[in-house]
Image (cartoon, rainbow, N blue to C red; front, side, top):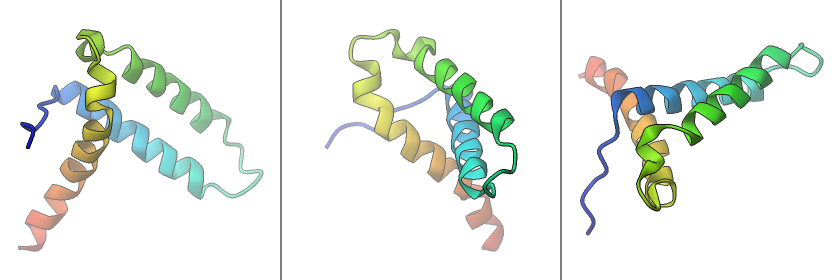
Length: 84
């Protein structure tokens, strides 16, 4: 088993913002004027892809899926702790 990836907080925050914006865009009714959300998604995608963490060889290929999982887990963790 591979060691878990450790992502910088700013990279996790970018991924969480991307996921939230994507969810907001998916929930927007047709004709609701989604230009702002689409532009934000494009901006966040650019920031994610050019983040310094991916400068290592094969960084994105090795860590992209794990980043998405970590952002989802990190986003849901406070809710789970509050329920305890």
